[in-house]
Image 1 (tube, one colour):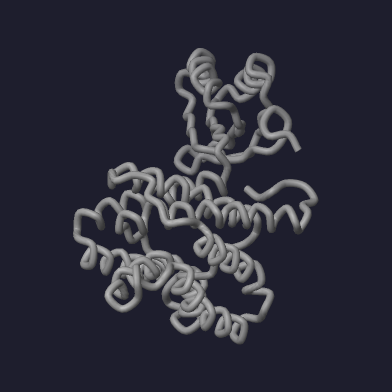
Image 2: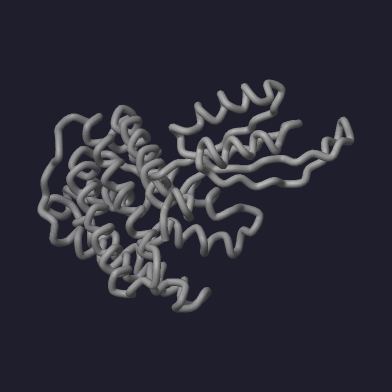
Length: 287
């Protein structure tokens, strides 16, 4: 899912700006305030702040560490992959750094569970908005992309998991296992919420139907459910028979009715149901 239509560049930057604002809110009010390290450069910044409390009053600010870690990374990435690779990430990182610098120090809740849950949701929405705007915030995803250039037998996702996992483990050592376990809850929620926002929150169901009565079932789908259906030529490799497999997309509420009517027409039909996200077209998300 991306912002639809002919999008203004300014709209993309506005979405990135709002997304990084939410990210900074979660980082400062939920994670830093409660000692929850969720990986990434923000997690590293929380660790640095804790380690330097005896050297600098209240520790090194989060925005300073975030900026310090990203500057050499951006320089290296520009040399290796060109400015086009880092352009949107640069915008995301600068706005995140700005938000971390201007937002006041405050705590959403003293309850670790509430902080991990709401922090994960807020951060997930923020990351989702940044990606919808076509940007990133640099950090471990860019670091992983650079490392993968020299370690091609690993994927970027695997490298990111190792880096972020290492930061979370260090956070467990610094703040304790209990807080580390709550941080893992937040990491899970961040992933689920950001993925849901990026891939689309409106779920439909994709249905494949293998039947000996394709014409009757197709008519039922078209007339009773008012949905389109496509016939796909298929061959049963065990029986060697040529068949017409039906494919359609329906809403979640229509799925029960569809299965009941298929059972009425052909009780021996083979029905495969899967999730379909962000379906564009008549009857679903209109362009």
